Length: 104
Image (cartoon, rainbow, N blue to C red; front, side, top):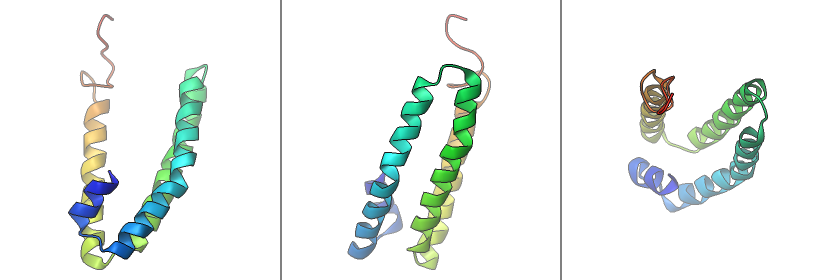
């Protein structure tokens, strides 16, 4: 993902270093939350983790956006919008991650 952002946003060397630092900062937090979600014993426990994950992602994106120039920030916003749309499709009924599961 980092490589794609570098290419699509046209980041210079200093921005690439900063992006790497930001990603590294949030990587451990994200991995911990994914592990907690994987180990959650019930649906309520899993659902409780989603707001924390969203907040972490939001904070990461705010930091990334703050290091971008106006044109790059606009492209970044568009990339985030497209990502959200892909995620919504995955959660749609009858789609991957939706309410219809193979064998059910």
